[in-house]
Structure formats: C-alpha cells, structure tokens
Amino acid sequence: MLSAAMLRSDRFRLEREADWVRLEEIVTKMEKGKARRLSDDDVLALPTLYRTLLSSLSIARENSLDAGLIDYLEGLALRSYFLVYGTQTSFGRWLSSFFGGGWSRAVRAIQFDIWIALFVMIAGAAVGYILVAGDSDWFYALVPGDMSDVRVPGATEEALRGTLFGSQDEEGLGVFAAFLFSNNAQVAILAFALGFAFAIPSILLLVHNMALLGAMIWVFAQRGLTVDFIGWLSIHGTTELFAILLAGAAGIHVGRSIAFPGGKSHLKAASDAGKRAALVMVGVIVMLICAGLLEGFARQLIDNTAGRFAVGGSMLLLWLIYFVGFGRERRRPGA
Image (cartoon, rainbow, N blue to C red):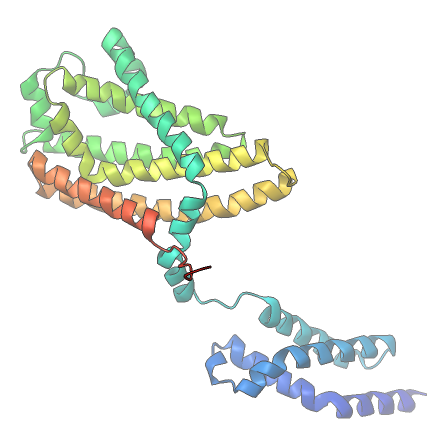
C-alpha cells in the first residue's frame, strides 16, 4: 500500500515537474528584480503556469499525496500569487508616478473640500483680527507666550520692525519662526488625523490656528507694518499655509465622506476617501519640508520685503501651476 502511494506520487511529480520548475525559475527572477531578463514567452506563460500549479495542488491534496510535495506546491503557489496579482512597482517608479501627476490629481479630486478649508481659514484669520481689535486681551488668549515675545499689543514700531529686519533680534526671530513652523506642522497633521470625526475637529483647528495669525497681523497693522509682516511670513508661509490648507481639506474630505457616503456604504466611502486623502498628505509632508528649508535659509538671506514677496509669490505660483495643470489626462480630439 505504501509503495503504491509513493509510486503514484512519483508519477504525479514526473508528469508535471517541468512546469513547476519553469514557474519557480520565473518567480525567482522576478523576486530578484530581474523581470526584464524574462523572455516574452515566459511572461505570457506565467498566468497559465500559475493556474496549472493550482490544479496540481488541488489534485495532490485530494489524493493525499506526499506531504513534502504539497508543502512545496503551496509555497510556490503563494509566491506566484503575489507576482501574478500583486502590484509590481518599484519605489522609483511610484515616486515618478506620484510627482508626475498622481499627487496633483488627488488634490484636484478634493477641490470642493479645499474651498471649504480655504473659507474656514480666511474666516478664522478675520475672527482673530476682529477679536483682538475689539479687545487686546484676546491676543493673550489666542497667541501662546512662546510666540509673542516683543510682538504684543502696544509694542513700538521700532521693536516690531527689529523682529522683521536686520539682526537686532535674530535669535528671537529664529525662535519665533521655528515655533511657528513646528506649530503649523502639528496643525497640518492633526487637521487630517481628526477628520474622521465628521470633520468638525479639523474645522475648529483651522479656525483656531488662523485666528492666531489674524491676532498677530493686527499687532503689526497697528504700527503700519502689515505689508512687511506678510512679506516676512510669505517666504515660507505660502508653502506652509498651503500645506495646512491641503491637510485640512484632506481631513474634511474624509469626515464629509463618512457623514454623507452617498450610494456607498460608510466603510467603502471612508476607504475611498482615505486613499485619496492619504496621497494628498504624502505631498503635504513634502511641502512642509520645503517650507522648513525656506524658513531656515531664504528667511535668513533675504532682508527686504520685495525680495520676500518675490520668493513667496514664486512658490505660490509654482504650487498652483502644478496642482491646477499638471498630470491632467489629454483627451483625443472628438472624444
């Protein structure tokens, strides 16, 4: 009985082993990143060999053939499955696809949420400005002490100007800018992460963060330094605030999809929105890194308002051109 079973297992192996060996060679080359060395015949044969392998595995299990043979076939089937049905994209190719249009398309896909976030941010800045203009004590409620130093209601024009130009307060200015960048990076991440709660926390976070900025603008506006302060902020601010805008929009997109899933289930709507929002957030991290470099270098080197606006405006234009026009699919004439 035992010898008959072994004979049946050996016959089974001999009849099909050539296909298994060929499949294993193809799989091994692909796992080692040598897929380009495969011939056209091997590439075309891969799905067929995989289905043949599954058939062999099914027969081996039904007939209780050699356990070692079944383990071998199961392992080869698992390896083949990921190559046949898995996504075979290298990091370099994914990166090229991301910057080549994947990121911009994801941003355009949530444009409705971007408009909502933009309205919320403008409203937040206006609220902060109006509150402090009506009662300067609101400034201390909105702006943390670490950010204010000499930038407080009642500060002289000379003191405020010294924080924007020259080296009179370079150390304090650096601390303020570093704190501002750290705060905005945290806001961007939290605005996205809290979106699952129907986007309400994301909206409140955007309002509070921009109210802080509105309060600070009022301080400089009282001494006629509004343009100079916005110019100082624009070097890294156009990129940094744009990143916060996209992060807030990504959070709102997720929350809105959960609250109003449409014809989809809540789980499906959240999954689809999460994928788009996550792609946007990868780009937000890139923007925050760019903002950090601009804050660390350009802010130190450019000491005039016109130059600062030129850098900040150029960065804003660059982002708008990329997000609005890059990566769009070309339609054929008459399509």
